[in-house]
Length: 211
Image (cartoon, rainbow, N blue to C red; front, side):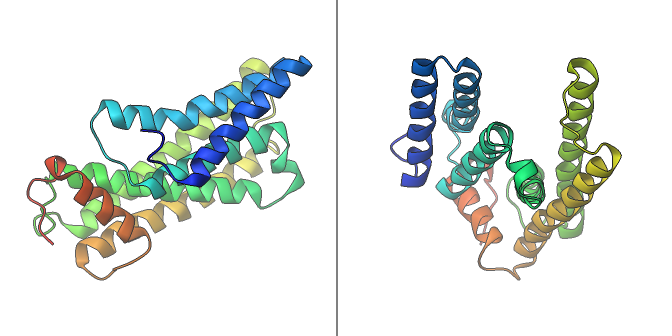
């Protein structure tokens, strides 16, 4: 399960373990906790996929691990959100694209992979809605954490929230557009290739799929 992942993913996992061990040795418990939490979150998709008997492309797992590490660990521990103005845009945009792709897969599963029966514009629309909804949910979570625990996850408040939602919308649109192009047979690389790989690796979920 773990040895099947890319060398980059395994290197990140080992680095997080090393940071957690070093933090425990130095008594830096908060750093150790964040490192272990990041490790657990990045391992979760692999464990869930194995439990559900779903084969997730290694490139998608790598993207998830990079996102979790960049958001939770680099973003919060090393304050990348404040040090690099573009970090928040990259994290929100990348995750929104991923959720847009995920939304497409979930809707396409309802058609059992019948690309000729699935209306491309409708599937893309619901994929976009799924991606943007996850983004809205995250902003609500940030607001709740700030209000309940007096944190500063929203940074500059309304301006930060609206900026994040705009980036989420753009990312979700890109993910949905990739699904639209895939159904229309107009895309043969990049994001549609990830979709095609996932579908082909899980034939039981897409019984009516035909190229």
